[in-house]
Amino acid sequence: MRSMPDARKAAWLTGRELSDLEPIVRGSLGRGGVELVDFPMARQLFRASDNISLARKGVVAHSISAGSLHADYHQPSDELEKIDFEHMTAVLRGLFVLGQELADREGGFAYNEAGRELLGLDR
Image (cartoon, rainbow, N blue to C red; front, side, top):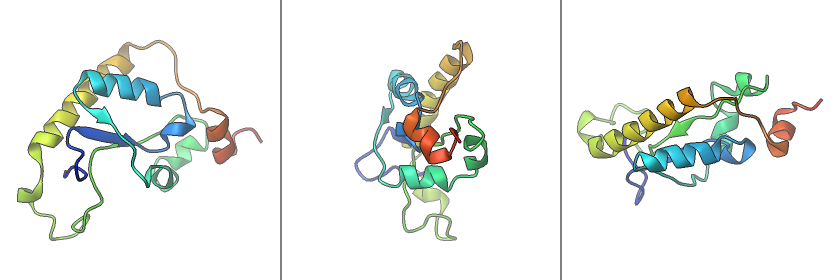
């Protein structure tokens, strides 16, 4: 995993403006030392994700990423020595905090009006 330029110890959430999950993710990651940042393609990647079929059934199914779409992404040239282990470790710590808080949380999550409209959930 390589961080985005100038975004070490940072992660992004696909479609974060579409549900009530974003503030929970932001807080949990922050307590783990990771900042939630904007990523220009986050909404596009939400719709292109493997979990979109769950989202279309109303399941809040975002993806969290902390990597960049660099020139070596999914290429043979993406070698082990290019991994930013310090960044990756910090993000994993933040995700651990998030996982604990989600496991202890009562209640679920829901798509907001924009999310329901995008996913066609009110039809």
